[in-house]
Amino acid sequence: MLLVVDVGNTNFTFGIFDGEALEATFRMTTKLQRTSDEYGICMRELLAHNGISYEDIKDVIIASVVPNVMHSLLSAFIKYFGIHPVVVEPGIKTGIRIATENPRQIGADRIVDAAAAFELYGGPVFVIDFGTGTTYDLVDESGAFVSGVTAPGIRTSAKALWEDAAKLPEIEIRKPNSILAKETISSMQAGLVYGQIGQTEYIVKQTKKETGYKDLKVVATGGLGTIIASETDAIDIYDPTLTLQGLRLIYNKQNRQKLKGMTQA
View (tube, rainbow, N blue to C red):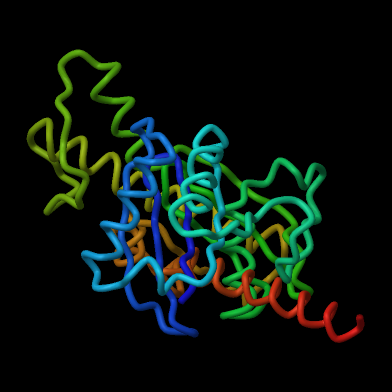
């Protein structure tokens, strides 16, 4: 089995693949500082809870946008799984070409999402990830990552409201019954959700206008993406496992490279 790990600013998301089948997923918070022992024991326990022995994990691939957890996390896999994970970083084969001005500044999560969307749905494709930040990335018909837009995520915007405005409460993020809010909580929910929908629709519209791509496929992912995707026609496909599938696809490309190298040798 292959364990794929998406290390985001808010959560770790783990996926266990048996071939192409995603057998289980689980999450851990990124916010807590942990030692390699804590990571190792916690991951073993989470696997066991899903009916999977850590001994069944034959390899690991990680994409991370949080550098300060990587030393402990990598050490945990080495110590508790006996595995040196593959890490998505500059130089790794992904199946797409980064054609921006500074490729090294593109986050590993965005590269993984773009690679997955291009391979699964073809290009040109516009990839939206509703995470801590909401990212909008364009992959052209040749598989080149050509541009990206970065905006505050829904939860980030909400946190700014209730932390910086003394009288605004912490709220559940969900679509209210109406945009015509009559009290504080639903007014905040309306602003957050409908504001994100409006932002998404405009960015998609403007991207199509500037690129001339009339057949541009729009693929969304991210935990809160389901709220937005269900409320707009601007999104063609909502794929909650896009990042995990992308990690699997990228891992397979590394294996093929290794096999080719062994054959040539």
